[in-house]
Amino acid sequence: MNTVATQSYKNGSDLTVAALYHFTNLNNLLDKQSDLEIICKNNSILGTLLLATEGINGTIAGSTQGIQIVVDHIKNWEEISDLELKYSLSSHQNFNRLKIKIKDEIVTMGKGDINVKEESGTYVDPKDWNKLISQEDVIVIDTRNEYEVSMGQFAGAIDPKTDTFRQFPNWADQLNRNSDTPKKVAMYCTGGIRCEKASSYMKRLGFDEVFHLKGGILKYLEVIPEEESLWSGECFVFDDRVSLVHGLEEGEYSLCYGCQDPVSPKDRKSDLYEAGVSCPSCYNTLSEQKKNNLREREKQFRLAQERGQFHLGDKSNSKKRYERRKKK
Image (cartoon, rainbow, N blue to C red; front, side):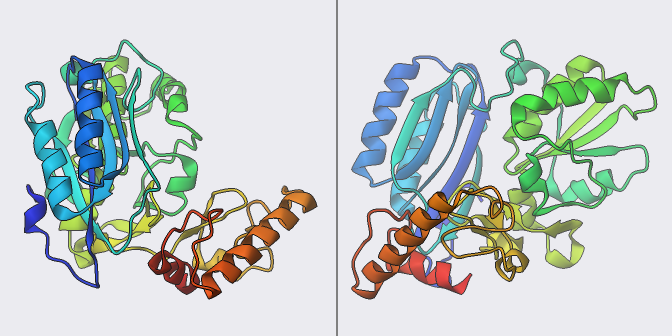
């Protein structure tokens, strides 16, 4: 899907969410930051964009026309040759503000000498992914964090059990020390950026054949029919929707206000779950004072909603978002 204009809206969706990244040698970062801020604000675009000398990364949401204007602006940069883009739809704004930051890395691995543009692995289109990861001589690696993996993954994939992407190189170093480890590797992540950068590190370690899923899980869920899929579960996304499933429809996970961990439908049935307060992951670690503060916040939020007022302490800034939260 190359342009926002090709989207067909359904289920009352009226906003477009664009996830994008590109590894390239990016110049004039301050000028690019300033121009993007002006264009995004003029078009009421919210979300986060990260700029670094290694490229651009981010997710933004807004009107179809506004998103198209921002995307076209980025594509016109002389350093941009193949912007990785994934569009999805939302019935509400998923971000509270606009953040455009200049960083050392557009995805932080802590290996500043890695040049992804020059030494990354081989892209694999979603249509070819099932065949690749079904081969016996291929190890499949999930490069996301453990809490993301717990929500869903590809059949047979290895979970490095990392809390942050910075921990991946140490895990890969240990894997490389095992002489029995196959040297043919297939890697994936949410949108493709982490597995692409990780593929560069694996190549440096000497793995013979390194592949990574182009467009990540999100592109796979968009184009591969569910009946042909090797994906199981839901895919965590870093915005208010929390998780997506096949067809990039919104999933059933929500976020716990006590710890910000994903909460499954099963978790919400637990005696340790209290809406707006705690979940099984944090019930025993939150202090009573913290819980009471969250209960008061939840009470004020509900009273405000009953009066049809916006409660400043709540991240859900619309009636639609509140209705979604109640359904979940």
